[in-house]
Image (cartoon, rainbow, N blue to C red; front, side, top):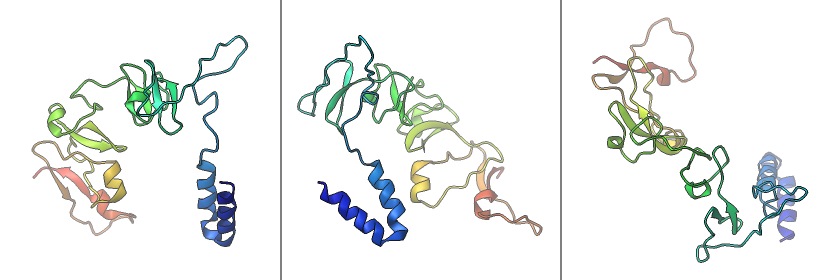
Amino acid sequence: MPMYPAILCLIASLLPAASGYLWAWMYSLPQHPPDEAALGRSAGPGDNLEEVTACSPASPCTHGHFCDEHFGLCLPTRPAGQYCRRDTHCAHGLLCMFGKCQQPVPDGQEGARCQRDEDCGAGGCCARQHGERVCQRRLALAQSCHVPPGGLAFSINQVCPCQAGLVCRAAAPSREKAFEYWPEKSEWRCRQP
């Protein structure tokens, strides 16, 4: 394994434009198992640290722990406000939303997880926010309703349609208009039909 960093260093020195990306990628790679702080433990005088056990899909963890499949270790579930990657990383009753453990929002309310529009209350829709499908309010009169044609911006964050009785339309171009970088984005608004 020590040969791989040497090869990456050689490539980074030969390709100056790509070297910044390669170095950033190399530094982001885990070199060691998680330290005490990452395990949610701190070694202090008189602390009795519990033993960290290995896990896999075939050998699950005990109650109050989750299997961190990246490191193959059983770790204690995390309280509200702590970072997470899945619901199972959070303590009982908490959900992993937007990368942190938090209290769930009641079904049908704004911010609650959903699968389809019917899961959200009246005046809401189910759309992605930072990649997570959650209930959001439909857009009100004059709110921007521009929807990208696709790509990463569309797949991570989506916009609800306009409220009932409104339509998403572009404004008529004016003759004296200030310069805008993306004019097509700001012209689309929820309007009366």
